[in-house]
Image (cartoon, rainbow, N blue to C red; front, side):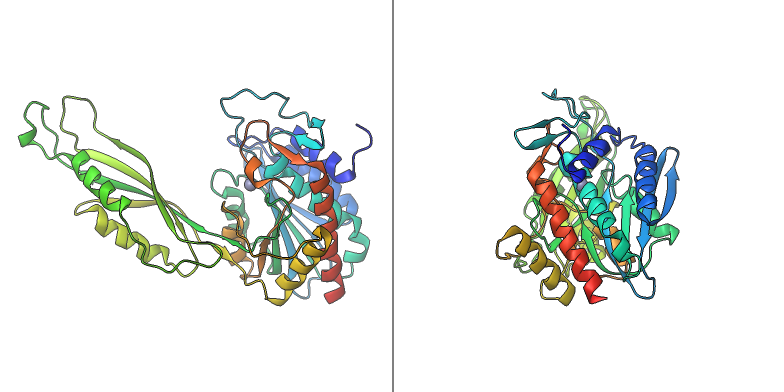
Length: 375
Ligand SMILES: [Zn+2]
């Protein structure tokens, strides 16, 4: 296995760190990357967010103007119930595929931008700033990115690349997410005398019927499509022979640009019914960049030149740390662009294509060269 590229070797090193979240335990991996980036000439800040957990901010270049930022998360999702056919942390390479938890989502993306930026560090040192914002805890709700934003260590940026798995396709946005818990209330009574109670499950059932028919009444976005609503979980009642006085409906809404989450939430509260309570479990805005914004157009052109394909506007099906980081960075144009396979994220026997990892290094190098030249 001696003849793998630097980025593939680094991906394997990163896969070997156990960063399954929960618990995450990202600190050893973060320290390893900080050491490597420090040696390459970056100024590194390790931000502890909990015991054994940390983010890394690595900066290089002049700080006289907002920089080009790259971001990626180092935590990975659990292995799942199904057994793997390979060791998920060994970085096995077979038939051009690198297997392992996090190979696609998204340790290959981090390895590719770390290698690309390190390779041209000597040039970046005196050029316009480049920032690597490497986060913990993305998979459980962007916890690391939120901590990074709240700490104030994040500088403003003029552009952002999210190395999440897109198979190296430049994606110009993703939907927002609004996760809600709606509760209905009633009065309990013995199951043999339901007329003495007030059934909270019946109220929830009627509300779910209305949710199933819910019409957002917004025009379809040309790339992101329509907003969606899904009731993902329902609970209610204590036992078979009592009238339930409480029920819960968990609702997953995915929004498109221009939708106001607070207004949407108010509208859904009215729909659930009188005396219902609604709580936001998770609230992230979407991300959208017009592809003809100057930096985005240049980065997309550089990417398509390496890939040898024309550009077709696409969006990512998943949400990313960009929902948290882009507003904090000053709303720079944002591309989601990374070597992993979108369909491999969170899968048993997750893999990344070795050739795409090397291609991502070439793409990031071309974007970095453009950035240096422009500054
Ligand atoms: Zn991811």
